[in-house]
Length: 427
Image (cartoon, rainbow, N blue to C red):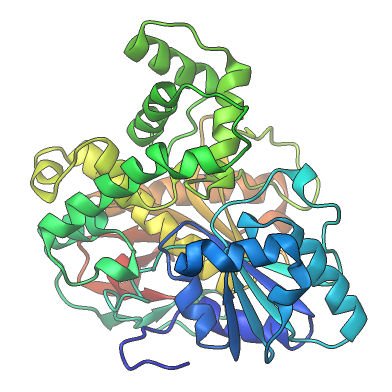
């Protein structure tokens, strides 16, 4: 299926690649990030589990006989498979039976409990994570600067054009939801609020059986605390304190960890894991993850932030810009077969984002909203790099770069540090 209105996604080529050597591909991610639409571009037949027609006839049929949901021309798309978890094992067995690649595409906006499926699908089903749109995918980045060129030393200085601060604020509040592009600030603000409200009142209740009771109010305050601590390594203990202060009731760390697991299974939050060197190092590194909402627009919704409010609070604006940049870097790193992490050691040295490739090469990014912060960010990167190289030269980064919101050019400084506008990046 093709559509002139479809904006190609970075994950498209990855789905096609996996279908060429795997029996089935499962595309996972937050609701409304565009999974179904992207998969329809490559599917030749579909089975929509959540289709309400006929009093949810498709779901009832899949529950009674999962094999009937697998019938159709290949690749055959099964949308929202997690609503009938037995479909996973049915697909796995059918892949074994057919012994052919490119048979099925599954989409899921939450992960069932592990006991809901009996087999991991190893060797038959491969998983891909889809996120909301990057600025390059939504056509808000010119794509004139390739991260790949930094690793391969093919980067060239270029002018990228002026960027207005209010425009960056609007991109953050809008988020990367393909269905809301172009509808204006009012729609962007209300969309984020609706998304959170829908999760708390509807989606949350579908994650487990009806016997499990949770305090939705505390989960909402947990989300608010996560939004307030966006792009930080906030601890579970600190999250507990925030919830207790908001509700005036105690909450155990085990309970918060359970709630965090639920949010991860719903792809509502994502951890940016700590970067550790593959070779031995004497440096003691902190292993706390940096916490993110899956899209910065959700943090804005939880904190009632509008573009106008961000313009009056540059500290918060800076954290939200970092979240926007790290969302994009996570998408770009996947396209490069890499992983996005962050660096912290016990000497209080930090790097906002570290992109590591499969071959062990890595690049370091500091993320700053204003051009007046570039010099300080570059100095910080150089200091950390010197310490790392002194400890073990084999651990040296391939490049150092400052991602900036308001720079009008991409260039390499005399000290070797790159300056890159976020609105010019692509994989």
